[in-house]
Image (cartoon, rainbow, N blue to C red):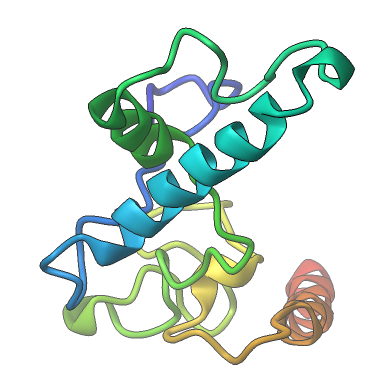
Length: 142
């Protein structure tokens, strides 16, 4: 959390290019190569392009591009940062989606998956939402 204020957006670092087996940083370099490729392609038709919105003309060098990608890259399969499971095994929520060690706080999104459930995770998100609604309704009757 960024602060104790629940209205503050959380500070999230997905570590996209910092973890895993890509020691040579080929993934990051490929994204930077892609930006440079598109820039070269659109430069030939600059009379039709008003301006580059992102990363923008102020981000020029490869180092600046790398930093931009590290700061702004977004994957649509963000998940597994608050997995269901026992606290002693790294779990953040229990099977009722309650955050360990808190009261009245649940997490119901893709972050509760212990591992990525596949390519089209929205179906799995719908399923946990259905399960969570059943659990929350059952707890409300108590």
